[in-house]
Image 1 (cartoon, rainbow, N blue to C red):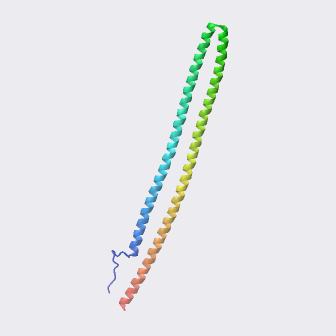
Image 2 (image 1 turned 30 degrees about the vertical axis):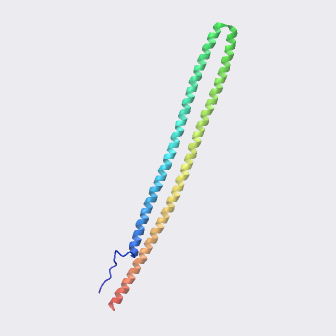
Image 3 (image 1 turned 180 degrees about the vertical axis):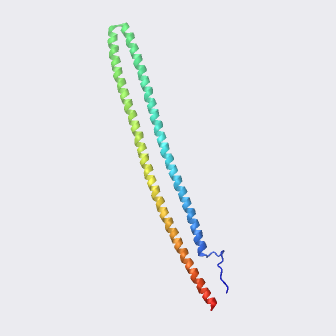
Length: 186
């Protein structure tokens, strides 16, 4: 009895084709995973850069506010000195300088108040931007997870189909082998 051995070099071998297709699907899965990881890393870097930019801007605003306070303190010191010099010169001039000093203090307070408001607005803007970026990052992460699960489901389905097809092919081969052995025995 001669047994027919399938030629492994035959291009029409369904088992070989199925194995090649499974290998290609595995390569596709690996490439998709790598792409998802790259996208996730890029998004994380963008969020970190935005946070760093916001912190730099807040730091600059604080330094500006500090410099303005120092400048205001210097102005106050200068005006107080002018008032003392004016006292020595005359009483009328002293009254005028006191009025000027009071007006300058009010103006300095207004300046300080407006600068504090500007700093608070800048901080609030930075916080809003950070919150928005966090929300965006969260949504993107959810989208990536959804895509990942979808691809995993597709890959599992394709693997199941390949297993089913391989099983059917193996049954067909067994049936053909039995039929061939039956015809050889006759």
